[in-house]
Image 1 (tube, one colour):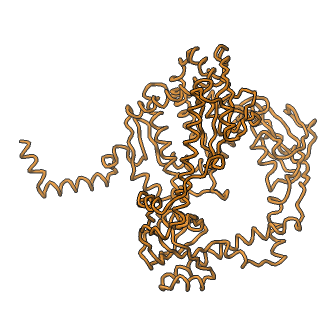
Image 2: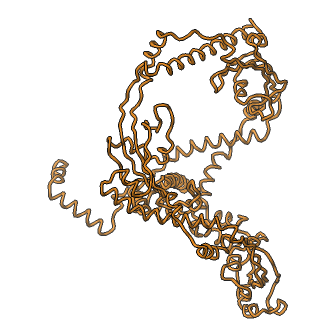
Image 3: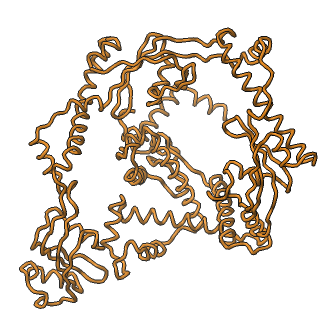
Length: 632
């Protein structure tokens, strides 16, 4: 029977029927079968879904505070190009998995827990400590949340925190372990040291030609030069157009007047009267009288009133502050009623005192810079079309540079790290990662099309390809001799230091006598240091770690200096372990518990990820990234 069914499924008729079924399912919107059972969602874990709309809200929220290296806001397209969206997606996958696990356990935060957290947050409260819905909605809006999205975010966060607390709730570091950690941190030591340098040793044997030949043969593989390429680069940037900007004095002043209030004025100070009512209806019934300038004593249903003077930041009620200090607000205007805790407030603007204004002469140079850059950006993008047309004509790099007024820079041959044969890195070839990548993709004599990010355009040409080679001994004889001499000096210095170390530790010679043998001064501060010595401890930071690597008093350590021309010999002269008998500090125990809890939670998360099936719709993610960045 099974064989017959298999044969039928292999027939052309079965294939046609299967195709018709697929088309019909697509027409009726049945697509889950092709996306892992999660439809158009980006991911799903259990009953928890990561929808595209929720993910998009999270992307927008995080990009609100993200900037590039020049302090400019990052668009979604740029975020997609730089991998930010993939990073956010990975974080959201983890959060989705953890929330799904919490929900499966019945540990998801309840509506009451979410509500209590919101109402107990001081950021959403008035000066009297009561929850203010207007402040709540205003703060959410400023941070890219709607009430529903924030509550979902908070529910997930509270649930994950519950899982975290569940791991560490019963965690208590044993007293002996905390005491041991306290003793480790509090242990103090003192030492003495001296430095042994090249100059303190006899001159090494001169390098003979035979030595040089043997050294060359031994290091021949390491001496091979990698493939290098000689390239020329045309770099067009916005800065190339800054000197083409010209403005009349009238244009500069017109711009100044248009942005003066926003950019060149201190915040104004306003005086207003606040009228407080018990209900919104009572407040609205008196709007006409308040607008007519009625004295507070004649207003009915008034709980309280006061005249206030200040700047926008002095108002805790964001909704009222935004209206009262709005650009269109004028004296005599009324604003409200606005909910303020258990009451409703109406404000009447009495007067406006403008803030101090920067004189035009003081900011003229800044305005010229701003306008020049704005105009240069426009000229830059206008020139891109001309640049592409020149590339399309087959013009040479030099012809393109001449037409565009941009110099063509040629560089000495470099390897894939943009390093020349003499070891110098060419920074101009590192300003965009694509430069070196394309330099080693092209054949000799060919050039790229235009490439580059943001306000940069590059064209690269490979002028010459230099294949890997090993230089002849005669070509590098002097450099090789210097290298061999340096190696011998280093070996002699290390051997001398090790010999002294062994003699001191064996008792054959004292530490002071060893130093005197080379006329080296001994440093021996009469003070104990901890593992993190302060600036005034009297010991070089590079030696501190070495002191705590020694086991017993009298032990000696040799430590080559970073300069390579000297070695420090360090002897441990004292250990203070009095901290071992002292009661461990509370801070030490808390630090240990936090560190262990973090490790436990990571292990817990790994188990959760193995237990909860996470379905990811990579096609939906790719579609989302394509929409936010159409150029990909």
